[in-house]
Amino acid sequence: MKRILSLLLSAVMLVSAMSLVDFSAFAASKLPATSITSLSAKDNGFKIKWKKKSSITGYQIQYSTNSKFKKGNKSIKIKSAKTVSKKITKLKAAKKYYVRIRTYKGKKYSKWSKVKSIKTPKDTKSNKDNIQKETHCTNNNNHSISCGNMGKWFNNKDEVRAYWDEVDIGYFQQYQNGTITFKEYGEKSPCGYECWSCSYCGKWTGNFKYN
Image 1 (cartoon, rainbow, N blue to C red):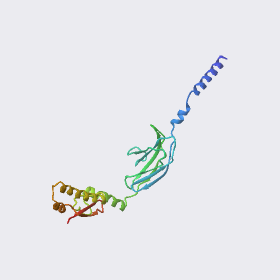
Image 2: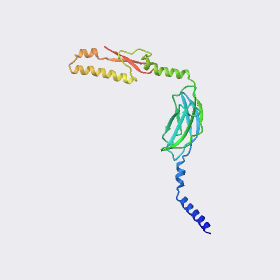
Image 3: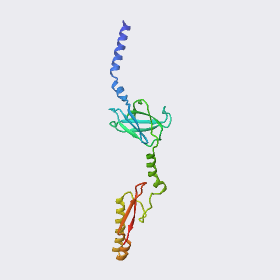
């Protein structure tokens, strides 16, 4: 009889102890996992789409040329739970990449999604031409046309006009200060200009015109 009472007492104590445990905390610690819904090759990379999840901070994308993710891994954090796509660029051409994604909240992460793979496109002639245009002038200072007598290059046509105004105002101030005569002002200050742009980088230069 005492043994039965002892067992019953132990059972009651166990039930009481379990009632004090907050099982919701365990449930909350397990973040919802997401999955990749689309993976498509783009110019010099790929675009990834995934399922939207709630009660999280954001997502972490990881990609690598190693299928086991043992080396060369790259990670990108998406800091909004509402974002469901991302374009990854500046990757090697005609290369196979393995991609996975997971959710996170604070310092906690969900399990990784199923790994998917994508092969980036080959270099096309247009892509190579664009790269050449972007680097031709900056690397070699070799524009498609020569620099004008303004002696510099501008980002756009408006900057050319602004520079002409700046030069003209500079000479006019010298005339007002008595540094040069009115005749010298007329000879030194350009009365107009002509301009053109580089077909490689799109920057502008020009020639001042004088009376």
